[in-house]
Length: 262
Image 1: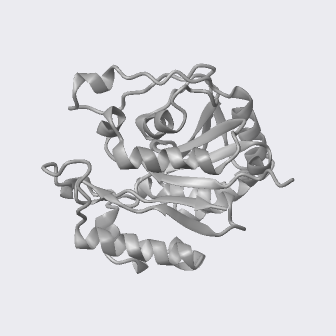
Image 2 (image 1 turned 120 degrees about the horizontal axis):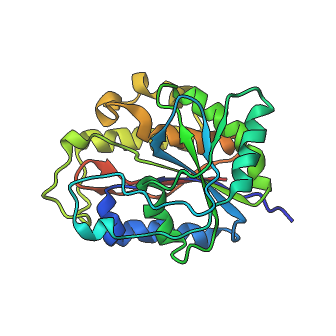
């Protein structure tokens, strides 16, 4: 029986979704209905950036509230979940086998890019989680290769999820719109559509060169750390088709796409 797990990219949106994720939470919950229960989750979030890959071996990952200016209730949320130190060791083993520099952090917790969607997917914290950093100074091709090195985990019961945002220009957000308002700026929709077409057609060369080829690319991502996680899960399932399982937007400019690879 084929037990290979797909990989996923989720757009995590505003931290306020932790207080009620609505249709976005439903899109994240739907992931758990598509797959067999994983042994563990490897989460790759836009909110942990390092010079070289770092995997967390925390046995009880802290719920990191890495944001400011939000209601007190948001800072009181905790997501108690077991860590997976063995998975951090396995990640290091896979990268070291290809002479990639990698280190293990003994107790780094989960940032909001990780725990906000995960608390919707597995609210009881029943699946152990290890987080892996991205490298913001590197490009999409680097992260695609990183994902390819992690591909064996898919046959080992590990669910690889990357968390970022299909568009991420905080300066253009319309804070007057409610989280459930589906309005989207034309530039954000144009970028979202271009990415969908290229992912659907598995146009890897164009995706690697998105900052030059995609419409409004630099406006959609003034810095590209929120899109880089997508390339990790794309690379980890490079043999598989891409399926957009959710398309939407919040606050006018944050495209909230969810993709399954495999």
